[in-house]
Structures are given as structure tokens and as C-alpha cells.
Image (tube, rainbow, N blue to C red):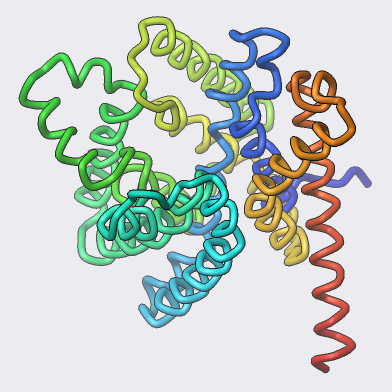
Length: 334
């Protein structure tokens, strides 16, 4: 019987897409193709992870807030470990020089202490914001509030070029950017996808695979068009937030749920998380190795090969690490 995709399997795909965002795998081949793939298509990775959290975590949190507290502590511990792992890189790169106490606080609680670690403080803040909106607002107000936050975020992200044309609006966003480097954070970015995930925990939308596929393709094409227009007119401060991401993520998540694959694979979940956490370290290591063996033209300058090497090394390490952890738990702790 042909195996169907599951949420846990798609986590791996999402993690691999996120790796691309930090490498630009097609940049040495074609800049436009790289923009479409890296800065548009790969942007589905993080929203998917957020939707999974909304799907699994928020229903339990709504029933009992203690579940949300436990989840927050769990994510905070993971984030703390990540900060320790990347602290030597921060120091070596001189990223802590002249940052000041306020800068350190901003990085820890909002921006992330390394370029991919923004996700963890965003997740913690986002899940609490979404929890309070769902818990204390009726359905209409909740949906309106979450959408409004995302719209505000979009005009501080991919649509910022329009916002800065208005003096008053520009000043408002400058105040926001004095606190957070981007609107891609737990207040403006995360709630919409966490809320979508929660919505799917309540129901799925029964459609034929053909109709769902058509909706997905249409949403993807419109997302690419949206991204290209914004890029062409140089409107983007960042490129994480697009309006067409919402219907695209809706259709992708709905399609996966309709596969009715009940697989619950904790190992795949953990591997995807490890890939996300560790891949910047392999970007650094492969760059260093390329210089040692004098193969920079192949291992670094060829962006596609560089991406493949980082993905393979990250995936292999994650599998070995997770397998060793499972073995240790079984043999030693038991």
C-alpha cells in the first residue's frame, strides 16, 4: 500500500526548506529562481511548525492552562540549550561587542541570540497571545484580532515600502522596530498560524484531492506573484510575511490531514527539530572544511552543492543523535 504523507513526515520537509533560507541554494544559478524558491516557497516552513503547535498544543492549553505552562517551560529549556550551543559562535563573530544590556535582553526575549533562534521567543510569545485571544474572545473577535495583527506585521515586513511612505505610519513602525528588529515575531507573525492550527484541531474541510490540489497550486502561484511584485518594486524590509501564505498553508495542512494517516512518529518530530537547531553549525563547519581542503569553488561558491552538503550533514547528524538518545534512554535510564 502506498504510504501517505503525515504531519510528522512533512516536518522533515519543512525543516529542509528552512535550511534553504539560510543558504540561498539557487543563488549561483539564477537570482530570480533563488528568490522564488528561497524567499517565497521556503517561507512555508516556519508557518507549518507553528500550525502544528496550534493543532496539538492549543487545544490542551484551552482546557487547562497548566498544559501551556508546561509547554512554555519545555520550549524555554530547548531555547536555553540552543543559546549555549551558539554562544561560542556569537563570541567568535564579535556579535556581543557593544551590544549592551538592553540589546542582550532584546536578543534573548525577542530577536533570538542567533539568526534562526528568533523562532523560540516568537513561539513562546505567540502561543500565549493566541491562547488569550481564543480563550477570552468570541470567534469573530478572535479571528479579527489575529488577522489584524498579521496585517500590521505584513506592512512592517514585505509591505514596509508602502508603510514608510506615510510619515505617521512610518513613525509607528519605527517605534515597533526600536523594540523588535522585525515584525516577524510572536506578536504579529505567529498568532495567525497558531490560530489556523487550532482551527484544524476542531475540524477538517472535506474536499476531493483534485480540488484541494487545485486550491494549493492556485495559492502557490498567487504567492509567487505576490512575492515577485513586492521584490520588483523593492517594498520588502524582510520577506517572511505574505498574505497568500494564509490560504496556501490552509490548503497544505488540510491536504495532509485528509490523508488520514494516523502515524504519530516522535522520532521524526525530534529529527526535524534537531535539523532546525543544528543546521547553522553545519553551514559554518562545511565552510571551514572547504577552506581546509581548498574546495571553496565547489563546496561554497556552488550554492546548490553547499545546500545539499548542509542538508545531508544536518539530517545524518540529527538521525544519529536521536537514535543514540533513544538507545541511551532504553539501555541506561531504564
